[in-house]
Image 1 (cartoon, rainbow, N blue to C red):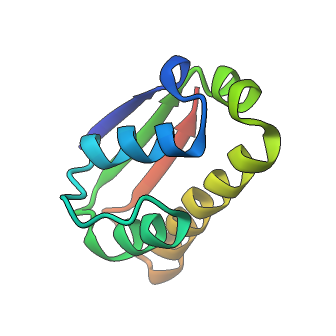
Image 2: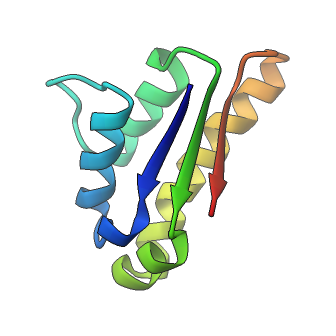
Length: 96
C-alpha cells in the first residue's frame, strides 16, 4: 500500500495526525500524539506500506523544524524496526 500525505496542508503536528490517521485507517481511538503514532506504525499498520510525505519542506516550514523532526524520528524508528526484524514486507517512508 502507498499513502501520500499532502504537506501543503500540514501546518502543525495536529494536521499531520489528522491526515495520517485518515490515510492509514487508524480508527476512532487513535490518540493523535507521537506515542500513539508509534503504537500504530509498529503494531497495527499492515505491511507493506510506503508513506510518502509530499511537500515535506512546506510542512517543516509551517510547523517548525522541532515538531517536524519529532514526527520524522517516529517514522524513521518504525522503518528501522522493520529492517531489524528482517521483514521483507516493511513500513517505509519518503520525504518528497
